[in-house]
Length: 170
Image (cartoon, rainbow, N blue to C red; front, side):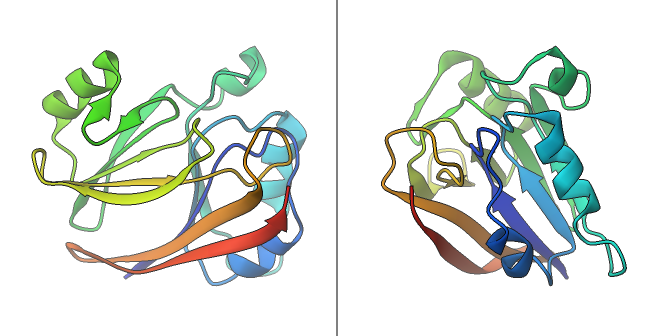
């Protein structure tokens, strides 16, 4: 069983509450628009003295060359029995952007996670047989009204116990 904390669009702001909400997570996945190297360092160093979760991520459209040298545009990997694809700009079912649609058809993940829109979504795509998630935005920049995260579990091939966490107003 792998407990995952999902975050996106921090734009250089990391609420301290994130560390409490993700304290029991095995992995933290950041779906782009980190906004600063310092934020990445905060994520990587926050759990000192405890089990440190693995931090995975992809860069977003506002991320500079330093961040792009650490994280790829797209990440495809296996988490337990689930094939996962992360990409900052992707769209949502059935309105994926053309580049993302091509990658989804190529890789055929069971879980696709995007950010960018600042719109929280958890939606199953029947046509692709794929769960789509977007954690919304955890930062203070953008047009969203409430900052959000998602916490969930992958247990073998099951994706379950999905929780939406509100961090407060932007």
